[in-house]
Amino acid sequence: MSVSFRNVNDCLVVEIEGEIDHHFVDEVKKSIDTRLMSNDVRNVVFDLKKVDFMDSAGIGMIIGRYKQTVKRGGVTSVACLSDNLKRIMMISGLYRIIKIYNSVEEAAKVL
Image (cartoon, rainbow, N blue to C red; front, side, top):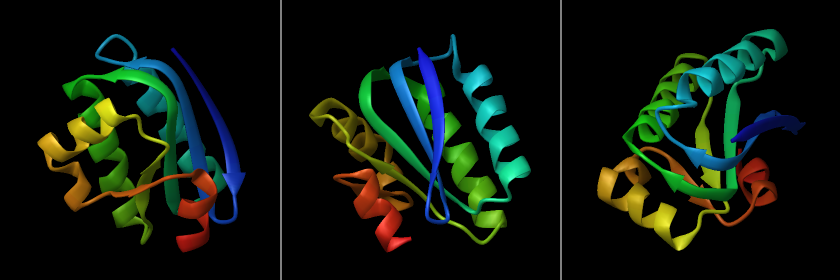
């Protein structure tokens, strides 16, 4: 799994490639948290177009970043989900608190 970052407007875009599971979640959380604090960014967009699997640890990681952005007056969203990840978002109930977009640009424009 790999993680890369970029800024689009007032958003930290977190692009993840590979599987989001309990093996790598702690590392990803630390990387995102460091970026949030050092860049003073309020909004986070997870670009998941290159993610082929996510378990409950991945859901927890997204929820944790959601809580952080809310505290900072921001928004967390996800973009570019496969059908499998959309299903996971629906089953877990994440779609109720985290918006789903077709592209990072669409998410960044709304935020």
